[in-house]
Image 1 (tube, rainbow, N blue to C red):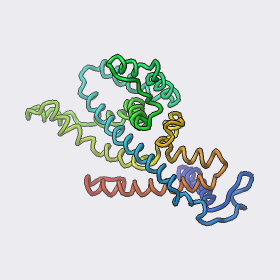
Image 2: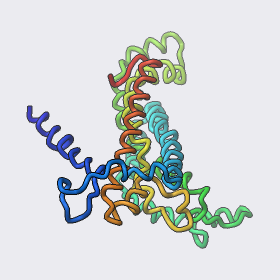
Image 3: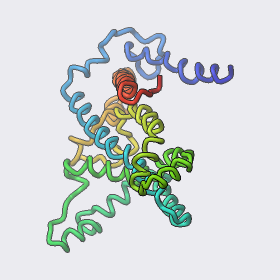
Image 4: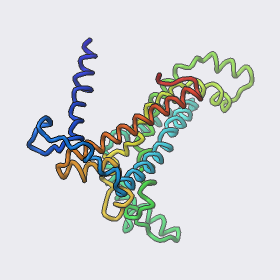
Amino acid sequence: MFGLVCLILFNYIPMIGLQIAFRDFRPGNTIWNAAWVGLDNFWFLRDNEFWRVVKNTMLLTVSRFAVTFPAPIILALLINEVRSVWFKRIVQSITYIPHFISWVVVVYMLNSFLSPYDGLINELIVKLGGSPIYFMGENKWFVPMVVIASVWKEVGWGTIIYLAAITGISQEMYEAAKLDGAGRWNQMRYITLPSIRPTIVLLLILGIPGIINAGVDAVYPLMNNANLEVSTVLDTYVLMNGLQQGRYSFATAVGMVSSVISFLLIVTANKIANAVNGEGLW
């Protein structure tokens, strides 16, 4: 009963504020005395700039999801194959640590490594006969930078659930496979991977709604005037054109459209999971 009360109090009552997407809300007023304006705050749906931002968001989030989702699975499978306990713990500890580093520090590290003047990567490129690259200022490098940094930061943390699922697999299955002549590769392919498949599907479905969320904490510190064309995503669009200018109705309207898209994505993903795997969230 207490959980239900908390759910209603913190998850549903705040949704009353969504009505300002249909009102002309201004700072200093309440949400109840602002005038109704219908769908006027959804004018961005007819704006080419908004759809360019949606394109940037989808390109970044799909690229990041396509790489960061399988990476923890692969790392967990590899760690599971390590027989040395102390080496396994060292690898896990090293891969976990970046999760606790803030994105601001990550961006500072990227700036240091990728600087066109004295960055480690560019010095290596020059020694190999190439020319320095301005990674932070060229549009084509923005998405790869975010994807690689995301993998480095979160891959270790993402393995926790998969390693826990692997721990629950019966050792008798591995012993039976060994008696049948299965090597390490076949054990991983026919026992480990199928056994953690429900966990993979569950995390896949839970991760789908976030596919429209590029993550302002990762993108905003990397934005600059040189890469603004590709680095403006929905989160930063709402921040710069809505919240920072006091246009709360407009920001709420954009957020509402983003939420509807996420809801459609999770329903679609669940139907696909049920059709392909026979298992879904519902």
